[in-house]
Image 1 (cartoon, rainbow, N blue to C red):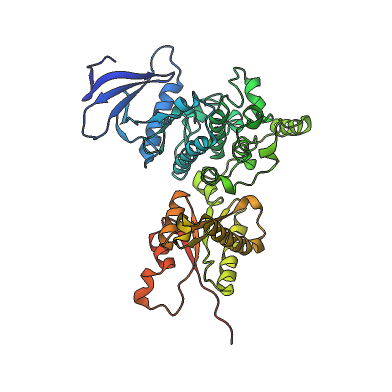
Image 2: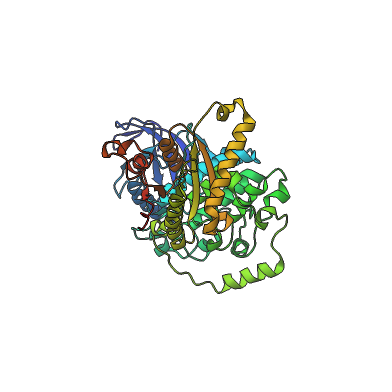
Length: 461
C-alpha cells in the first residue's frame, strides 16, 4: 500500500516494517487515542501458506489478551481484505539493546525482569508466545515490557492452526526451545528457554547456540548446553549465570517452573542460590551429553495442562512473619500452614517477609546499626524457615523497611507477582470496628491474590 491510501477508513501514512509474513504500516483514523499501525499479511502467489494462518492466530490471540504487556487490538479486516489495526507501541526494542551487548549485569537483570513479568502475564491468560526474540519485545519509556507478533502463539482454548498445518518447528532459530523442535507447542517453559537465550545474548554479546541453518544443527540444543557466559564474559556474576543457564536447560523439567520465578530471581539477585551451574566455566562432559542424547532420541511428547493449571503448581507464596512481636504459638501456626502449601506443590517458591519500622537509625544516619538490625531480623526469618527443611533455592528471606507494614507487604506482593499470601490473623480481642485497620485484614481486603489468615490454636484446658 502507498502513503495516502485509505482502507476501510484507515489512512496509510508510511511503511514501518516489512517482514517475512506481514508488512506493517503506520495509519491514522478512528478515535483510539493512541498511535496506530496496520499489519497486513503477505498473500498471493509465492507467499507461504503460514502467512494467513499466522494472521488468523494473531487476530484470535490479541482479541483474547489484555493488559499493559500486549498491544491493544483496535480493528480487523474482513477475510477478503485481512489486516489488524493495533496500538503502535512506542519505546525501545530489546534488539537495540542486544546490538550494544554485552550489557552491565544490573541492566540485564532489569530488562530480563521486565520481560519475564510480561511473559508471565500472557501465560496467566492461557497464551504461550513461542516466538520470543529481542525484536518482539519493546520496553516502554516507563520500563514495562510489551510483547508483539503473536503469529506463532498457542492459546490453550483455541485450535492450534499451526500444528494442524505443519509438523515443522515454528519459531526464530536462535531462540527456539528444544521441545519445539520435537513438535511440542503447549509448554509455557518453552518461553522460559527463549527468555534465557535473550538474557545470554544481552549478557555475553553473542547467541547461545549460534544461528544454525540445518536441522542437525538445530537439534544439538536437545543435548548440548551453551558455553557458560562467564567463560566468554568474566564480568558476568555467578548468580546471573545461574539464572541464564537454568532457563536454558535442555529439559523443561530442569528449568524455572514459571516466568514469574525468573523475574523474582532477577529482582532479588542476592537471594539466588548459586550451584555448580553458576560456577562452571566449561560445557557439560561427554557422558552428560550422551545421556541427554539418549533421552532426546526416545522422547515421547505428553501434553501438559493448560498454562494456568501449570502455573498453579508453581506459585510464589509470601509468608508475612512478625519477627518483632509474634509468639512461638503464632510462629508454629504459620509454619504449619505454609508447610501444607509448599508440600503440595514441589515447584512452589516461598518468600519469608518481615517489616521493620523506619527509624532514624534505619534511615541512613547510622548504617552500622541499620545493617545490624536487618541482619538480626534476617536471622529470625531463617530460624523460622529452617524447620520446613526446604531446599535453599526454594526459600528466600526479605526484611522490608516501612512505617506501614500492610502497604509494604501489598507492594512486595504486586512487584513480585505473588500468588498466595499467608499471614497471621488479628488477635481475638481486637474490637470489630478496629479490624479493618489491622495489618492482616487490610492485606486480605486489598491483595490481588489469595490470602490465608492463620490463627494459633487455642490452648487446651
